[in-house]
Each structure stands twice: as structure tokens, then as C-alpha cells.
Image 1 (cartoon, rainbow, N blue to C red):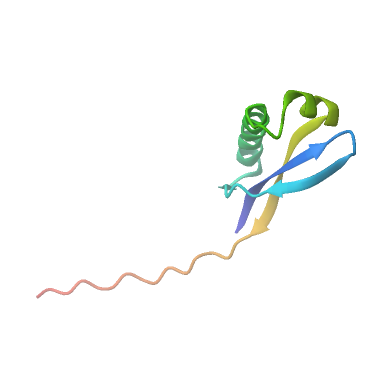
Image 2 (spheres, helix red, strand yellow; image 1 turned 180 degrees about the vertical axis):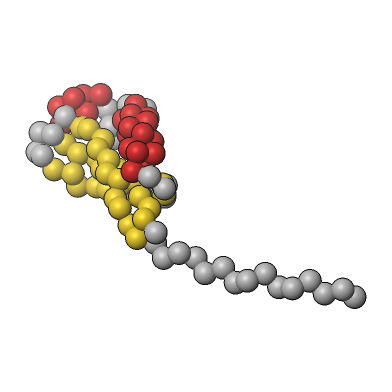
Length: 90
């Protein structure tokens, strides 16, 4: 069974480097649903950077900080569901 996990990357376009990645723990059934959520989460993450002390506006601007994302395809084994136990009439 194919699933997609969302991976966020914090990147500097100045150095063309993405030193950190984060797996927020979201899993999706389709690539499309992953991408749609990825855009929203990347935007929200970028806007939240401005509120953090270590990411002042000047640092974000000078380092050309961006938030990228990837929808990584993974294969998950189908869960084994045991058959239902028969009901007993007592």
C-alpha cells in the first residue's frame, strides 16, 4: 500500500543549502492531498519564523531563507486484520 509522508526543509537560497529537515508526522493517502497540505504547512512555517528570535527579518532576508517540502512515497504493508470471533450464545 502506497502512502506519502510530508518532509519540510529549511533552506538558504544564498548558499543553495538545506541543512535541516523535519518530518512533521503527517501521512497521506494521495500525492495530491500531501502537496495541498504541504503548501499550507510550508507557508505557515515560514510566517512563524518571523516570530522566532533566531530568525529575525534581517537574517531571513540576507540568507534568503525559504521553506521547501517534499511528499515522499513510502510503501506500507497492509495491516493484518484477524477474522472476527464468532458470537457465542450463553
